[in-house]
Every structure is written in C-alpha cells, then in structure tokens.
Image (cartoon, rainbow, N blue to C red; front, side, top):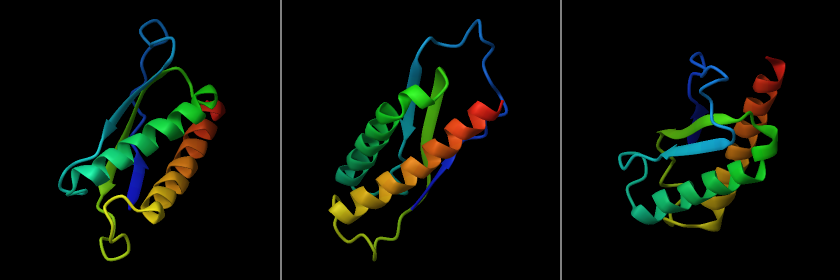
Length: 104
C-alpha cells in the first residue's frame, strides 16, 4: 500500500484559505476493489487527520491512495492487519507533512 502526499506546490493565499483543516479523501476502486476496504481506508484517513489536526496548517488537504495494496498480504477486506498498516503509513505521512509545513 502506498499513500503519498499530493504535490503541494500550489498553496492557497492566506486570504482565501479556510480557517480550519478541510479534508478530501480519494480511494479509487481500481486500487481497493471492495467497498469495505475503501470505507476502512477512508475512516483511517479521517481518524488520522483528526488526531493530528492541531499540527497541520489550516487549509485544504487531500489524501489519495495512489497504488494498490498487496491482496496476498491483506487477504481480508477489513482486517486488523490492513487497519494497522494503513494507520502507520498515514501517521508517517502526516508527521512528514506537518514538518514540511513548519519548515516554511
């Protein structure tokens, strides 16, 4: 599974940026065939962002699943193993994003 940050080269001007963290999630059907899996991933994304919202800059955030996960490794559509793997990767992504925003 690979969840990567979207190119952040386009940043909204402070006058037009929202006063909170707004989240968009994209989990394409071609990468997660079962709706149970897509729902699990979206819930994990929302939960991870909510838990780290204070560390993220206010604005529009989009998290997109860019590559399929290994179906041989995650046999069940909504396994605890998949949930843990997604959460670990999301936590790493959000820490990296918060650090990049703080460095600006």
